[in-house]
Amino acid sequence: MAIEITMPALSPTMEEGKLAKWLVKEGDTVSSGDVIAEIETDKATMEVEAVDEGTVAKILVEEGSEGVKVNSVIAMLAEDGEDASEISAPGGDAEPAKQDREAEKTDTKPEPKPEPEKETSVEPEKPKALATTQKDGDRIKASPLARRIAAQKGVDLGSVKGSGPHGRIIRKDVEAAEAGAPEKPQAAASPVKPDGLILPQVLDDRIYAPDSYELVPLDGMRKTVAKRLTESFMQVPHFPLEVDIQLDKLLSSRSAINTAAPEGVKVSVNDMLIKASALALMAEPDCNASYTDNGFAYHKSANISVAVAIDGGLITPVIRDAQSKGLREISEEMKDLATRARDRKLKPQEYTGGTFSISNLGMFGIKSFGSIINPPEGMIMSVGAGEKRAVVADDGSIVARTVMSVTLTCDHRVIGGAEGAKWLQAFKRFVETPEAMLL
Image 1 (cartoon, rainbow, N blue to C red):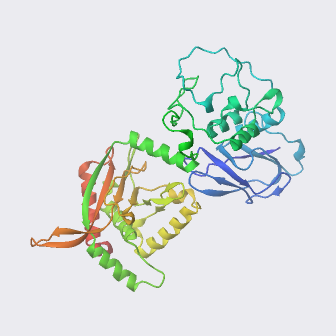
Image 2 (image 1 turned 60 degrees about the vertical axis):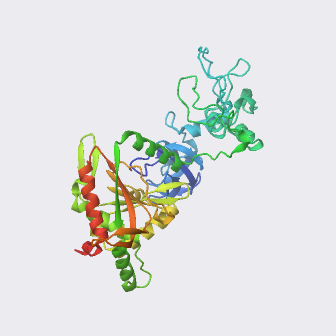
């Protein structure tokens, strides 16, 4: 019996991904554990291993296909003794993109009968890229895949000549039209489709000339970041707390540590802030928490997510059990995670499961800022630049000190103002007296 190879879920939140590359072809024999494909998620590129052994009978989803749903069938495997040529794709479970391609090749199914047009009220300036309902009184004939590509590329289907059966517009027609003419932005802001669904925000070419900007399509990471941050900002009731912290003792301690460290080891200020954050979470366990509909989840360990800017977005690799790790271990682990994050080589377990986040823009000279909470974490700390400021000493004199401002953003459903303030006091104590981190 043929074995279905399905799109794997490479992380708990993954719903779809891009099948970047096949490492096998039809007719190849594979064994359990063989790497057969590369899958791109919104955060990383990962290898997929075969679970069963057999012969690759059919590849149903071509490499480069985006938006492949988790658990959809991407290939068929023939078992030992089974004729691979007699294996057919599953009927209703095949991946939609593959069905579109098959429809473009054969088009054996008759066109669906157009439904009577309902009288609707729409804006007169309707986006050309979405004008797929009427053409000379008839419905434009185009495959679902062609419609999706046209919407993504801003191609007017009304101006595309179809080369498929009965003049149907297929994928290559849209791609040829897009390659032969400059991409046009969609015309109206938040247009309404005939079925009443609101479409994504687009620029109005009555305000911005089509040739006055370049439209770069969103990749998977940017789509995910935009979605998660919007949900967090709208759904999580948050409040900021800000405090100034003197860094002079920490900088002095860092210099001494690096002088005594073995060759190749260099502890950064950020490494020390990671350690101080973890110890503060242990000192104030009420702040090491997440809100859930079933209650408050108090975490037993401090898993510190650290924001790393990468090409195309942002990722937060996690230093797990940071409260029990030394500065050297944190430093080496952070360097490794950051390097692989920029290469998009992190595993899902390396950028999920954090209980607290740090975002540091001090190296860019930013004095202070507020970050958006990374659910389900309860807090995120924004770190500004350390700079020389005039400070009133205990004896009343004015002295120069290196000071940084940090802003703690809290989820008010689980962390109150008093709890957040106590955590900042603990964090400040560890930073201003770094020897306390050794106790």
